[in-house]
Image (tube, rainbow, N blue to C red; front, side, top):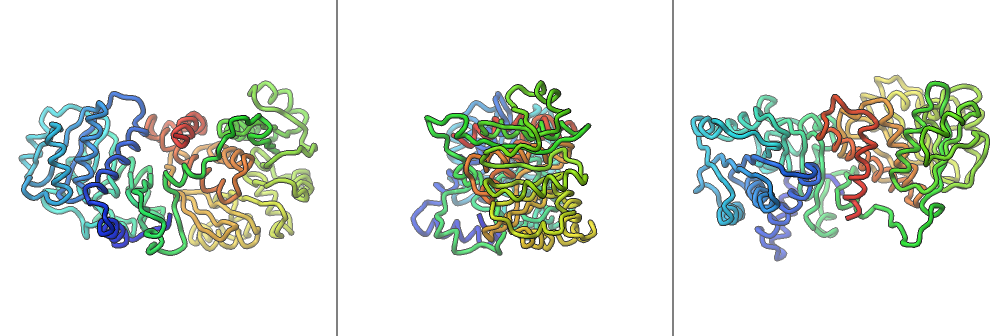
Length: 500
């Protein structure tokens, strides 16, 4: 989806209502999406939640979310930061539904009200920020500021409805650094906000998910800012490869991985396992002879072959665990002359590629490059500081030279596709900055290309899935304890949810 300014998103809502969709129906749709997504991240219950609600539609979304979660068996408490008489429109309709089903609601109208409400309060698993939405034009004030301070002090995972209170939707920065929520998870409604494309916004949104509300392509196409896009949950679902009922392992994606070296064979194994966990039917690790016996026993489903053998496959990966030696350079130069399958170049292969004078020449097979900032600097011959200060320019340069699709890994990873589109990945978190995380991503991308997705399709879906698995790991075990294994272990949940 394209990126939208806050005013454009409000226009989308207004046009949908003018076209005949009642505002309360639109809010109900938002509440259902919020509840389903929060239940996905929460996992199996029982769970408890405290929801902080403001006076506007964001507060109405919070009340509707509480209603649906209570129906699902959650222990729910809603705290409303304004007097009941101040709630109007669709939010009032949602409040009346919540009252009819006896959702517990407290009205906290001043500091004493908040202190009274907080005395002996039971601990909860999640707290939800539904205080202010994209309509706010400044930092929270008065009782809403007190509400946000109380919410911040809760010892629970924090979820923002649509946007963290106090964050500017168009810039991705706080109105006031002292009055802004730092969420663990942000569930953004309707379309991605323009400010979310900036890496600094991740400090406040935490793990980010974009949820569509059923706006038509025609409506979405009337507005939107620039050429950058973000993948929504629903778009990811539509990209998921369909597995035929009569498929056999050879049709699910034959892929090969060339790399590994002494002391670094684990990188290749991680990529291979990720490919298996992402639907590839036959996965072969191509390594040096002395590594074969060791790797044969490492993972039963992975096949092991010679590095010099050219296998008939649907996609190839070069690089995990590869050292940039002269032998590797000659090997890669030879392999790139084949044009029978898409090629993914990562890690050590990028360092090797940087030493080949003709690497920028376009090849006939689709090519996908996935450098981090240091590898991008090597490829372009730039200083690292230059890449970090001008990431978009570096990305454009690498895409133009390679003729393929290029991913620049990092916070809010950015992609320049061979089809001309430009994407920012919304998912992921700092806990994924761990050895082997990139190898897991390479395996996911390889599997998707092996199953027939184009390089641009594989890149935007694979990055999203990789980040979402990392987000699950982050919310369930904490960022400090994460490893590449954590991401691998959560891939099945992501794939299962996408296939529903």
